[in-house]
Image 1: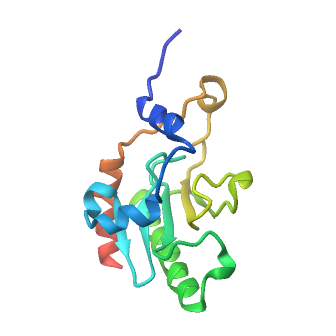
Image 2: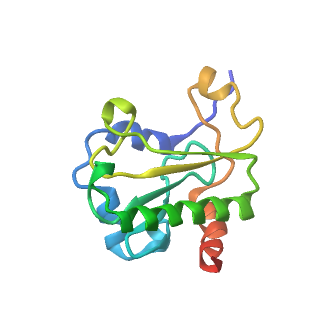
Image 3: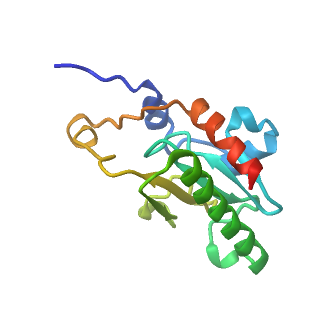
Length: 161
């Protein structure tokens, strides 16, 4: 049997549910966008690469304000975050030419939110045939590009918009 190694996935498995603090508060506060893969910032939110992506280019859009309740967002935050979602879709479309997108959020741990206390939208580019037997049979997702490379490709697209 041939093996496909994905050592980066073990970090997620090992630390799931154990993290103290909030990555959506801490990473943008560091100010090192290249290292933390923050692609762009607005007045009320930011776009960041998902460290454990479903597909290459999997982005997340989050408010700076720490809240897990969408009803707690004010109108200005909703407009600003909506514009960031548009910018994320546009950048991915221009750079990676996906055939479609999944855009959404998981509210609450039971709904699949890995970080339920800080809202974030997932923007996942999709291509025909991007799902294959590997996740089912091998319990492994094959990603053809490293995060640093995806960041390098996408960051200029946000500066252009």
